[in-house]
Length: 124
Image 1 (spheres, rainbow, N blue to C red):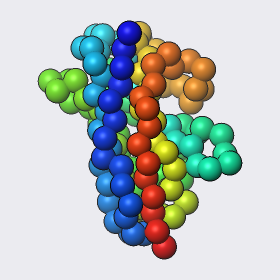
Image 2 (cartoon, one colour):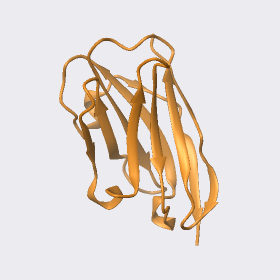
Image 3 (cartoon, rainbow, N blue to C red):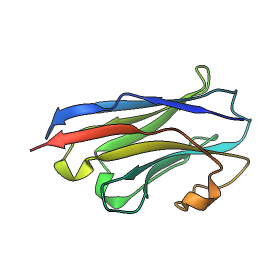
């Protein structure tokens, strides 16, 4: 069973930065997709950013230019650097993992492994 351990959330002010980390409990396969999703109170879980084993990335429009997803294969970890945070970024952020040679998808149903979530709160 793959477990994803997230860290890096917290309470910050608008304009501040945070970096989220996600480390799978097993070595990722040679091909995979890893992604960050978020869920705000009363809203559905939404895709934020994704990255493939080859380094391809994808973002939702509202975080482009502010968030950067990256991977460190040597550390078997994925990161989400979040800059210029806004109150509307407040949510629980989840790491997701889909082993295999797939393109990045925004559908939660296609990711079999999920982290427990880390809270990000941005005050105005």
